[in-house]
Length: 171
Image 1 (tube, rainbow, N blue to C red):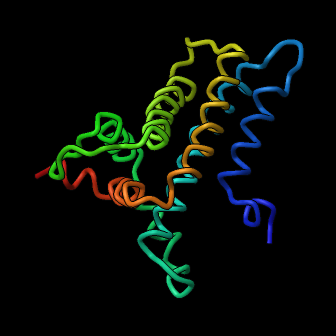
Image 2: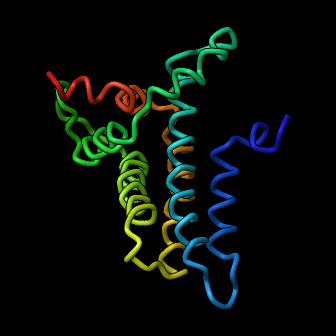
């Protein structure tokens, strides 16, 4: 069993984001800072997808299907569902009372995905270490907030919406 498997790829990605953000002590390398931003987003993405697939496919017998189902999660739906939870109103369901921890997780998804797009695609955009460390901390805070709310019924709904929100939006 590899370290990523034992620890969870999401935990390893968060560690990697921290490492990349602090790797060059004197003059931060833009490539490392950009990868740190992107990796921080993917840490949160993989944390949520892991829990969503475990929610949808419960039990050991279903474990073999989780990796395939994980491929069905899209970044656009993750963002759209997260925006709905931030606003407390999910299309086709209606208003919801969303606890602050889940709002923080949803906000991190949106902010980190936007930052990842900048880091990955806008080469004119320069990042500084303190800004990147803030993104990495937002990811770490999302992990902590998720740990507090992940077993709630609203979290179950959120995990489901991460997969099907686009289908609801079409109706």
